[in-house]
Structure formats: structure tokens, C-alpha cells
Length: 143
Image (cartoon, rainbow, N blue to C red):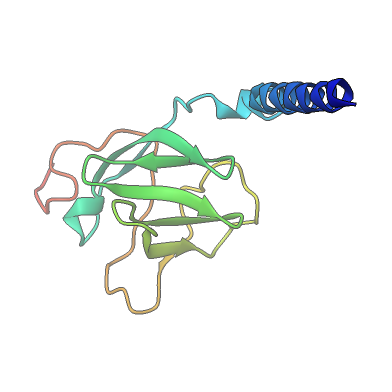
């Protein structure tokens, strides 16, 4: 009887160890190809908030959606299918702009226009562009 009990304990330990090994194995998913860094660089060239001005590079994914950030910690991100711009250096991110015009839910990449101030945020209009900012843009200087 003791040998049967000992055998059951050993089998139980082996099963638990095997289950742990299987849980740690990562299996590729259909979304893995979405997890590649985006080569797209977005630019904000004019804003009343100077921290928003600059180039935004893809840095990581959150909930299978890409996030772009600039050197100042500002970001462009998607949340529940809609795109936002704001301070990504804090958690949760602080929204300055929401995409409200031409912004269908679930869009893979942010639109270049259609962002409106979040209620209570006093910043001027902002738009994204793919071309790098020209010298003097966003600073009030003439080109």
C-alpha cells in the first residue's frame, strides 16, 4: 500500500512538472507578423506645445497596437480602437488629442489629420505628417 501511495505522489509531481513546462512554451500566433517594428516615422511640425514637436518612431506594442514616441516622451497610441496623442511618459498616458474626424475604430495606423483637443486641453491644432519637419517649422521662423 505504501508503494502505491509513493507511486501516486511521484506521478503527481511528474504531471505538475510537465504541465509547467508546457505552459512556458510559446507558440507562434497569427499576430506575430504584426509585432514587427513599423518603419513609419510620424512627424508633428507645429504645435503650441513644443514637447509635441518632433519625429515619432515606433517603440513598442500595447494590446497588439503600435505605439510611436518622440524624444520628449510624447506619444501616438491606440486605445480601444481609437488613436490619441499626448504625454506617454506618464502612466496611464495623458491624452491631449483624440482622433475624431475620419477615425474609424480599429484602424491599424493613425490618420494624419482629424485630431481634436481633449476637453480641457488648451493646445492648438495638430496634425501628423510623414515628411520630416523643415528647418524653422514649429518655431515661428520663416523658411
